[in-house]
Length: 293
Image 1 (cartoon, helix red, strand yellow):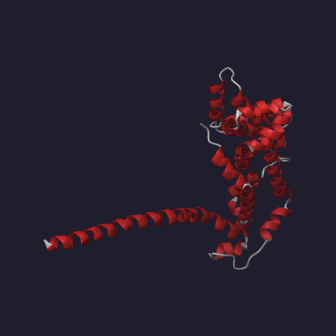
Image 2 (cartoon, helix red, strand yellow; image 1 turned 45 degrees about the vertical axis):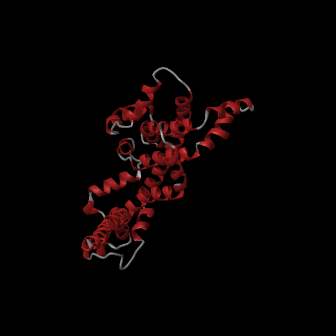
Image 3 (cartoon, rainbow, N blue to C red; image 1 turned 135 degrees about the vertical axis):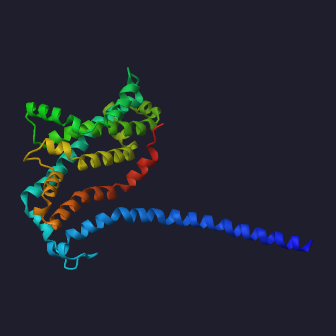
């Protein structure tokens, strides 16, 4: 009987020792796998930033993890070139105009979907999301013909309005969830307190859905900033976007400096990174609160 009694505890110990190892492996995977994934995503951006500070001879003749000489000549060349500099300003202008128009249209639209019932509201609401799936290329030619008739081709407002076809639906979809989370009783209390509808909208509703507006601006900004096809089709000289300059330079890669192209790409990434950094707290609140039931 004694060998059996001595054997059972040892068997229990060995099982517990083996059961700990999978838990340790899971913790290690959960801890380090996201870090490895982020590092993998940042590798191209890291080399892009390094190339932007390298001379052309260093890029072509040596492979170094950091710029050995270091130069700002690539960035100076961009800002000394009126076409590149104005293209950057053009992109910022039509992106800002698009965000303003999208919010002005989407907030009342989302409020209507949240508070009122009307014919085919559900079908129309889901059509907003379905319209976001339309490829921009399918509307490029009709928009060009329409804008040519109106005489607004090659203007910032033309690109901003074209992007509204895609930013307004997603803005309405997002904001409807946030407005629905605001109790209807607040509308009635504000009316009893003597608030007019515009005052209620500006002083009560908009502050209540501020995180949702932050999320909406984020999506509208990202789409309008990275969209190049419509912006390239609808502009020629005066409102040429920054991405169009990079695209044209990339097609003639052998004729352009790699350092200059890398600096252009870094400047194209920078506004989005800065935007996300400054509104990160609003984005966190918005993604947490804005679930759609």
